[in-house]
Image (cartoon, rainbow, N blue to C red; front, top):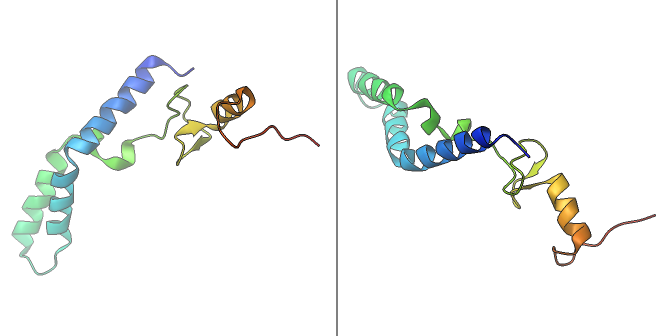
Amino acid sequence: MAKLSSINKNNLRIKLANKFYKKRKALKKIIMNKKLSLEERFSAQQKLSKLPRNSSLTRVMNRCQITGRPHGVYRKLKISRIALRKLGLEGKIPGMVKSSW
């Protein structure tokens, strides 16, 4: 089980990323537009840098929804390999069977 503070910090980052998503996207679009004047693009860059750092999507960590483990997490399932194996062995995932050879 991961530290509760790490899980809470990541949840805060997810909330901030969702809150500022549209604003960040609009500012980045202005910054990348070469047809606009340099002053407009520079002011947009300054506004972007004033936003909270944790509102960026790249700062969000993929964590297991069950254990909070940061490594070995399947993106589609949002659970770690260890939690997936445990649920599979308990028979809680339909279609998944224990392999043996």
